[in-house]
Length: 326
Ligand code: TXA
Ligand code: MG
Image 1 (cartoon, rainbow, N blue to C red):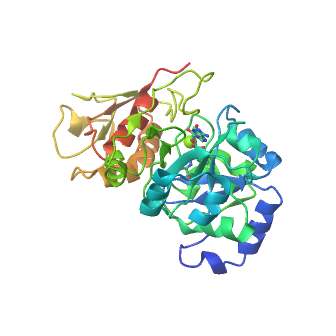
Image 2 (image 1 turned 60 degrees about the vertical axis):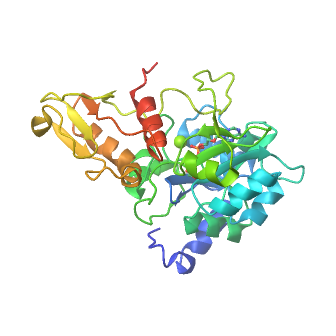
Image 3 (image 1 turned 90 degrees about the vertical axis):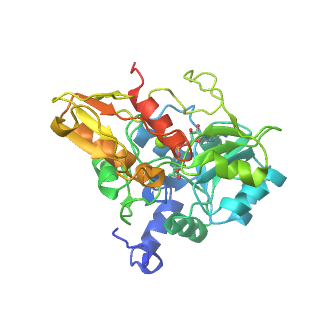
């Protein structure tokens, strides 16, 4: 299904897409962050199809997407902090992990059997529309096979998962380009479970409190933020951070205007933002990794990126992409 963001409600296949979701189908849906692999979160079978398509380890719970805060409150317990954040940043690139309500129909497979639930109201209108029309919370991890780079274009989704999907909705490239920020609110702390498209500083300024960083965990047995495995977003090429120089047979992922030795002769180069804009860099990150990976270079050198604002999420993804593989 090909959609420009203006005509999604009227598309002749919109009904068929909704019916497919209600019947347990898998649909690739664009959001402002990345393309999601969406299915009915209340159906264990539909969620199982997500895990099967992704080849994802089943200890990894999923984010459920909803059309608005009211719908989200049916599934999650919102304290004052959660309400403040939802009111300030929804719809948008923020996921809240809160206690699950008794009334919630979200399946145990979507929450991996936890008593908490990850909820998000995206600003990308298509996911909200589909959730509203179907009346279902939509579980949606990024629409890529486990361990691969998250997709920001429909072409990427089709190349990676095409055969497993009932529909792919193509609304062009994602605006934010990096997954949502995940905040845990299941105890008195405010915990950053995953840095993402909303900067930590924005959250701290609304709550007037420090956000704590979750202990990073590479142990799938005891996941504080399950799914935050160390090696993730893995390109085929070896990634090297803190590049000081680049050789002729290496690719360069650059940032800003600072010169680096060998840059002009590098095998391939993509600059995330020549002007040093971190928002632009986040939006280009995954596509740039794909492009350099497919250049055939065996090594991708990565220039330093400031760790402020969205730089925290960009550096998190780059570290995972560079982490040793098993
Ligand atoms: O931007 C996004 O968030 C995208 C788009 C499609 O919305 N979705 C996405 O979902 O990135 P996924 O499944 O790739 O990431 C889900 C993350 C995982 O790291 C998982 O461990 C965490 O959310 N998560 C889900 N439920 C949780 C829970 N109850 N407690 C802690 N972490 C949870
Ligand atoms: Mg993912």
